[in-house]
Amino acid sequence: MADNKRRFRPISGNVLPRFAGIPTFMRLPHLAPEEAEEVDIGLIGVPWDGGTTNRAGARHGPRQMRDLSTLMRNVHHVTGVRPYELANCADLGDTPVNPVDLEDSLARIQHFFETVHGQGIMPLSAGGDHLVTLPIMRAIAKDRPVGMVHFDAHTDTWDRYFGDYTYTHGTPFRRAIEEGLLDPKRTIQIGIRGGLYTPQDKDWGLEQGIRVIEIEEFFELGPQRVVEEARRVVGEGPTYISFDVDGLDPVYAPGTGTPEIGGFSTHEAQIMLRGLRGLNLVGGDVVEVSPPFDPSGNTALVGVTLMFEILCLLSERVAQQAKN
Ligand code: MN
Ligand code: MN
Image (cartoon, helix red, strand yellow):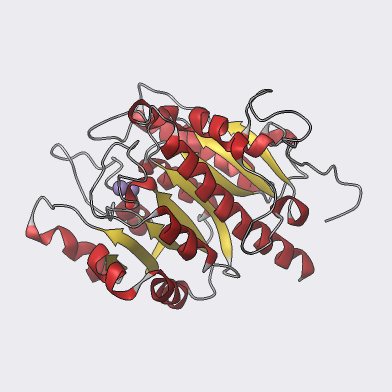
């Protein structure tokens, strides 16, 4: 990082109490993407849930997650990573959305991430429902497909809903694979469970070569061996982390639109994310936090703590790239 760059750091809870001030992600400065050329990692809200097929509300996720992110501190207590020393980070605000037009929203979100990507900024996003990952990938995986470590109760590779409708939060990764943005052979899905519409619903993803770890296999292997498998699947190529909070058991993350019982715990999620250090990461997101179902704010706290885990991984990647 060049010395003449402005350095951005969170406001310390020892300077201004955590309940005071305007909440931004991690208490970082807020910059518009056009004025963020010095930024390495941009924290971005995507306040949109127009892809939700049942219980809406994730459009309110970024605001509640910003509020709860004021509880985050600067040093990772296990790895010792200090993300704000390794990478210049800022809150780049929310993407524009159009709450009454799905395809217009996808275009607006994509355009925002193209601006971010064009400045060499790595995005770490807060949804929004899971369809928001599709326009993010359209912006950052245009030149070559990415691999993905995907935590979720659902594969999100279903094809159509309500007849012929192809865009919902149950379809983003089917579309991303069809569009050549996501390499299915470098994709692993962890925590999959819940009922299906038809017995064939599992087939398409497996036929494409996705490594699917259903929750039964997760509990058989344990988080450490699941992480080894994830590292084997994604290899050394560019890799995106997408974390749907409904992958967690609903006792840990009840504030979400499509809960499924029998999931992994928050600590197991942390162990898995810490196991992804050193991968060739290009960005990540935490999606499906739905504040109307999260009156205590705990699901948002879980979401932003996972964002901090991912931020530590991305900052190490930034520091590694700066050396090369
Ligand atoms: Mn999902
Ligand atoms: Mn899900």
